[in-house]
Length: 281
Image (cartoon, rainbow, N blue to C red; front, top):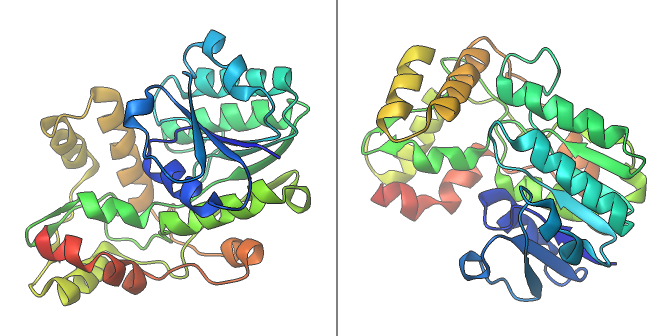
């Protein structure tokens, strides 16, 4: 068994590589080896999902694929290139990272794009499992400014999940895919949390008051544009602000525990594990 991991320099796939350490031969697809995280036991190969001609060598001998494409308008073509390369290489199973609520009528463009790629994989003839995680707890690491916390939840709860738990689910399925063939898992944390509650947890470990600053979808978009995000990404995240604010992500389930046999991490555990970051932010 050889597992190929795409998106290897990103937050989720880096955790998937760590979760796979010592469990199977692992290969990571990167555009530039010099930017790779250099995790022990991982073979790094160069390739680009935007350039199909670069993929055959990377996919050669691969039995299982972790398919993650960056959020953006080109995601369906990148996913299609990976699925085609997988078919040509004889890959047997693909575990694809999709998005919460992916559907052709999803309230976010990201969800609608993921629905296209999900459908293509489901009809590819390959074995498949699709993961649709809720909002990442790790996003809190980038939205704290001193004593003010920002985010896209509005005032509603969201079943946010620690990326490490997504990686644990992915590693379990990648190393033993058969029981999960043809299944879709929507991955959530153990509780639906508000950003007011997250701010309180952060303040308790940071040693200072932290408050959540709600923003409208338009304010979210404008703030992201001022922060350097491109227009497509800023508008897509503003759509998530509107969706989450309407209760789109206000639920939890047992999908994580059903795969890995333990409960996902709570917001309190996540904040404690990142105590120093929040103290310094």
